[in-house]
Length: 166
Image (cartoon, rainbow, N blue to C red):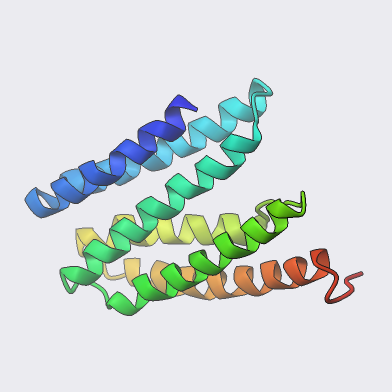
């Protein structure tokens, strides 16, 4: 849990550093990504997973991603449209997860969600460094995000009994 909380602390640090020195801000993103991987590895390895961890870990990731996209958009490095797309998708995911949690149900991350996170991570590391192929990661991430959302939507509708899945 300490690693997860450290990622929450990295969010305002990123914001402050982005205005001062983008390169240092990108180091914060890199450290956050490494602590995310380490956190997941240790939780599984030491069998210390918890419902709070399942909630807070992706929340930290999403808040950092939204913060980075907001700063990139605000400084006209990318379109703010990407920030808003992710914000709407994540808001819908939180609402869906809350509905399922109230029913005692949970949908875990799948490979599409993990691939989306990796693609966004690549984009938010490369784009501020002015590496043009970082935009390829961004476009890939948006496509994967849409596919992951559709997949989640079908799983959600199945959980609430509105559709049948095989």
